[in-house]
Picture 1 (cartoon, rainbow, N blue to C red):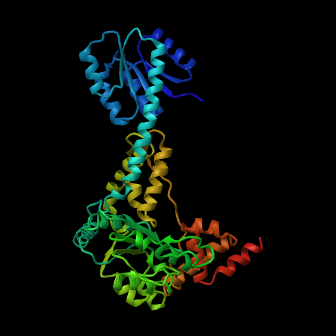
Picture 2 (cartoon, one colour):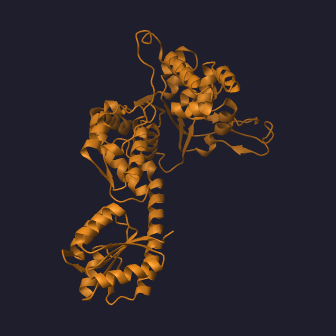
Picture 3 (cartoon, rainbow, N blue to C red):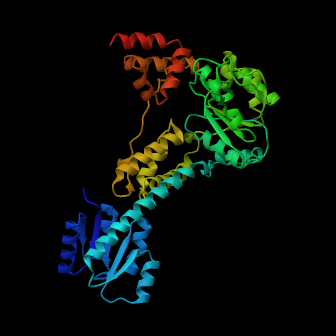
Amino acid sequence: MADGRILVVDDEPQFLLAVQRFLENSGFEVIPGTSCRQAEEIYNSAKPDAVVMDYSLGDGNAHEILPRLRASDPLIPIIIMTGHASIELAVQAVKLGAEHFLTKPVDLATLAVMLERSLENQRNRRKLAIVQNRSSRDGINPFLGNSSAIRELSERAARVAPADSPVLIQGETGTGKSVLAHWIHGHSTRAKEPFVDLNCGGLMRDFLETELFGHEKGAFTGAVQNKTGLLEIAHKGTLFLDEIGDVDLSVQPKILKVLEEKQFRRLGDVRDRRVDIRLVAATHQNLSLLMKDKRFRTDLFFRISTIPLVVPPLRERVEDIPLLAEHLVERLSGELGFGTVEIRPEAMRRLQSYSWPGNIREMRNVLERAVLLSGNRVISEKSLHFDETEWPDLEPNNLDKTLEELERDHIAQVLEAEVGRVETAARRLGIPRSTLYAKLKQYKLDRCAQAASSST
């Protein structure tokens, strides 16, 4: 495998051939070029790891082309060579983005060493950029867009963030509820204290209890040492419970006690512990229907819904899609180590015409796939591949069914199509396997899964 792909540009054929042969013998892959126009085309299409080019070419010079190359990908190292060197020329080239400036005749061994060091520095810069991008995800603006729906959410969230009351965030899967929860914490009086989050979706009662409240050594089989719960870790800060609608009924009164009395008890302990937290909860479920079915406590609902916030789905804010898509592509290209990636107009129109059942999370997946497969830093309509989900047809007989009944029927159909295989059914439904297991138990479909899988 080559040590790196090097674009070498020079309009002197003999010198270009000599550099190419030496670098190839040193383990590099070399792409030759003879003009500024050719250099720019290769730079944007072949994605070289480094560039070595003559300062003065037949159709231009380094001062003219450097800004365009740096704008396309600022992390690719560029080494400039010239037979007419001066300090002023070197300073100008470095200011425009050149990593090194060499005087001809060039010592080729020195050039090879420079390239090796430049490529190593490039790899380190890309790693650092990825780490910085990942660490800054919590700082994503949850209000990107100009639609009336997102402006209303922004204004409401700005008013409630400084308060200490519980917040209930509602919205479909993938709309960015956890991002909004981080934003609320960051703009609250508790911003300098811990933000602790737990996704309750599909968690069994025992696991949820020990995660939230902790346990004492010997509280149950396997409790070989004391465990600090998330409530204690979140003391003075914010506790974010995602998918609170999935919390077991037996655990719900314990959460209510924490909110009302500011105290809790570890599993296996005999004393109460004081805790000061702000609760932010989120769910994609209709809690009113869960209360009607007696699967969510009314008193807990009223306690956590002091300040309700509803995150609108993408289909209700189509005018925001271009801004969101550009922002996501910019972040993704940084995380993946790419340069600037352009979204073609026809691709943007396709993004706006799609219904986005998975909302922003699905959009990120589609765009990440497009960035990886685009090849030439341009996302066209052909680059877009959507995760179309099979939804139950809304026939007249289905219109009389509740959302819960539709969900049960759809899960049963997918489970049957996958011959009872829970793992593949969960992947097809776009939900975690643990969530599907919980729903199978809820809808009493777990026996169907066992029977189908045992018959294969």
